[in-house]
Length: 85
Image (cartoon, rainbow, N blue to C red; front, side):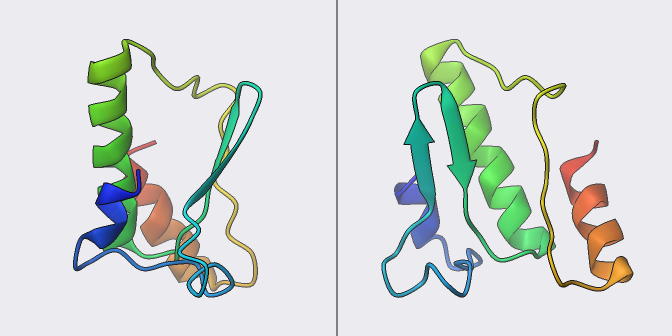
């Protein structure tokens, strides 16, 4: 995941940029942090695809969620469309 954060279109979550924090792992949970925009979401999806291909694991969409706090309804729609879900 760290290597994908060096992509020119990747944008850190504003509160995580200084630390270059992109994720936290707790037991079998993964929390990803990034700025809510379509190009960054596409980079995250690519990273998850590469991980899935390497590890043979896949995300459980029934247990996954996208949290967009304090953003416009238009941005919410754009981000959901970018995920294709």
